[in-house]
Image (cartoon, rainbow, N blue to C red; front, side, top):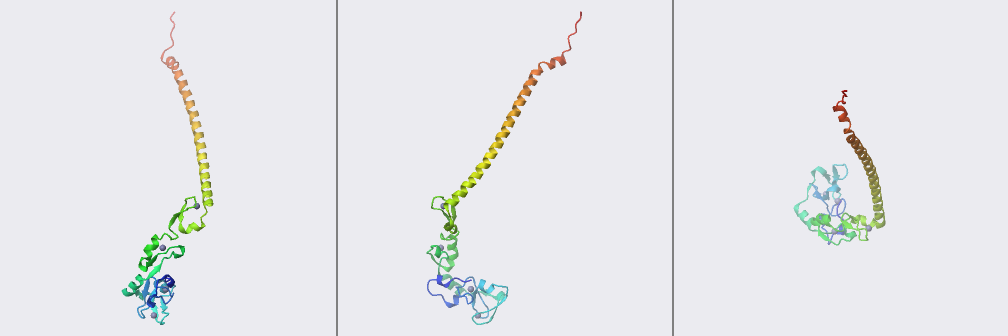
Length: 200
Ligand SMILES: [Zn+2]
Ligand SMILES: [Zn+2]
Ligand SMILES: [Zn+2]
Ligand SMILES: [Zn+2]
């Protein structure tokens, strides 16, 4: 599908117009017989490997299409075109061969990241900005944080419970060790020292 003619400054040579879509050639290819040029997508669309040239009715075989001559490529690349994002406020006018590079960096592009200037500071793409609502965004953020807090509280309660259990275990162990320690003074004596024999 070619470029809309209305986007170009000045007249565009008829040879640079696709006879199928009537736009300015995009990724053009040339029919070897009649030498008419078409957008690659216009002539290759559909399942048919064969098309009829709308200008002269000659058969165009898709596998036989070839690149357009260099002079045509040069004429095309020098055309002056407005940016795709002109409706979004971009005033840039570019050579056709610079359009792609510009679109990647165009600050009016729907994909270009921007921050909300109404207070919430959310980063989003240009295209999302018109539908953005600060209150909705902040509300969902508060909900997310509340969920997070609830999870943290649950974990904290579990850890507190575990800690109390461990403290109880330690107390028990201490008492046990203490009991053993006290016992030591009694049982080794009774085991190692034979009972005194009384000789009368
Ligand atoms: Zn076309
Ligand atoms: Zn033709
Ligand atoms: Zn632009
Ligand atoms: Zn906002």
